Image (cartoon, rainbow, N blue to C red; front, side):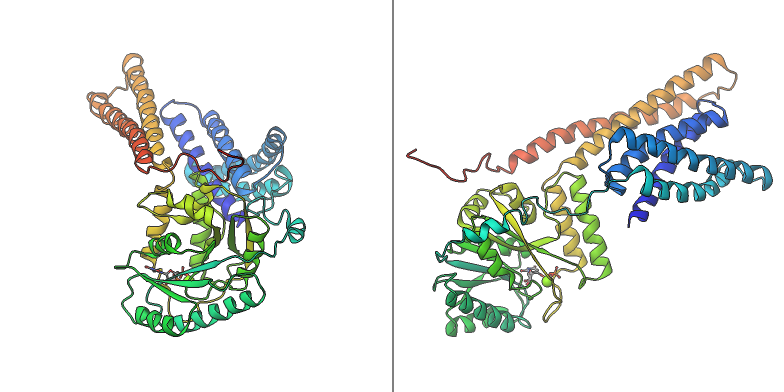
Length: 460
Ligand code: UDP
Ligand code: MG
């Protein structure tokens, strides 16, 4: 993984470097050596930042690790230059091909050097909340014996294959928890039928007649997992609400732990899967890439946490204030604040039936997650517009210089080509500015509560 990240950074570095070299050589008419040096300088800055933060997640001192990184690159660069010169003179390859060849020793030396020399102190990849497990020992002591009324919310979409087993297991679990005195007798499970087209609803209806733990909520039509979940969360009555998928992929044993954490004073308990062994490589890869992307976009999210979590009544009431139509619960809940912790569990295979999240729904949820929480994409346009404007300005100056001081000017070139770039840049910039306002409107229209009171004391 690190190597892949390093290679990606390498590609970025090479692109930036080569781009700069190209610009320097052909536009600024610099010599091969000086434009190479210029290209590397820019490339080094970019790659250092990326490698430190992203590839190796290093916590080294920036200056020292930069110096070490420079040393590594110097060695790698010498090897690279040797290869390039050798290839250039002996095989008469052109600058690009020999440059490409030179990347091989450059990368090898660069990676090893960066890994073991430049970035020594690596942050452990533990992207979970700091609070996790912090006070486990204290907690046990402060466990109260008070019973809580528990509501479990289970969204179901075409789940008739797995539902009987789910109901059975959840019933057993509730009985066990009642016997242990952890939850009250009126605790129950709410099955939210998300407009299923199979026998899910009739199954829920029949089961609710014989099983007092079964309650059903039927949605008018299929509104998607997130909306079904929300409907359940905002409807149920319990003092504590736990949401869990119908397919038994999430280990139900974690519920007892969640309740213990609640008793210890936590308002939100996130169920986090400890491994992704049961998922396909594709799902794994896309999930990890996605969490990273969200991080870059500044969306706060719990790594490897889906929608298996405990929420207290206070949290549900706060959630109710969020009137947004585009729902991404995983992103909203961390924004609520409150004291929270994590419970780890092993994620199993689906018990029966097949995934109700085909690629299309997955992509749509992923996009929802970005666009509901981040206006980085809009800011990106502004940046791009600014960049293109600056470049076209530089090229204009260059064209004037050619016209005034050399014989190389091609009639009509500047007057045709420059306006295209210039206007393109201006247009992007304007789009970006419009985007900035759009972003403001977008945040306003969400009408999110501006504050949430966790509790009060004394007579207000
Ligand atoms: N689900 C839903 N509405 C939908 C799609 C899914 O209520 O439109 C429910 C589904 O019944 C299950 C949960 O959401 O309880 C998670 O779906 P699934 O297990 O298929 O997703 P995966 O685990 O494959 O990501
Ligand atoms: Mg599932």
